[in-house]
Length: 300
Image (cartoon, rainbow, N blue to C red; front, side, top):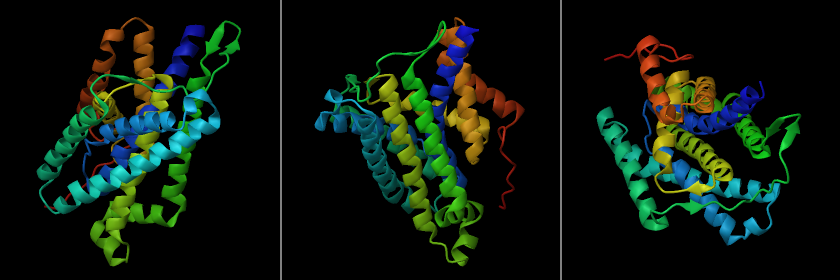
């Protein structure tokens, strides 16, 4: 029972990070019907922005919750700016082009960020400064829980709650939902769809940047190609939940995180990465729209 609870905590912590990245995929797809394959590399940039910010301010010498929140804010702002540039430079000029052009461009942007990251940051792994100190584990009898995992899960929940509030309680959120329904109708209603799309990219990229910092907090080794597999897994989580559905992305990510945690915990660590793609194949065969997705009718 103790092992089960420990694996449950591990899975929720990992799944919450997947959720932060998956939300970017699902929001962009909901508005543009585009799979932004560069999104995982924005997560990588968030980790490196957090690392260099920590080093520049010597936050590793004075770890605290305030230091963590400061690094989170800087990484989210930097990734939001990168998301804006990616949409403005790479995707907006091709918005009326065939979708295959956008897909190829997304792959190209991803490769550019990965190799540019190796050129700028170096190909060797870097160690993320410990900007939040831990004195001891939470102990409940024989059960011991790493406080970092609880903190990561808590911060992720707060960020996802803020996102939910933005989408459903604010004017820009209503504009995002209108644009996801129809760009043309939204424009006729006076909604600046270009600004809404840019904001969506920025919002999703900011969440990915936060995910990069939180991963650096738990797994302090980061490197320029870290976004490749994480991005693919977050994409699988978005598809599992129903891509285009915000709630589905979170649920799919938590399911994937828990499944990976229990698979590793019960003796099959070598199948950890394969699990995500096995789930992707199953969901595409059994329920292509995902757990919360709905069928879309397209006019041709």
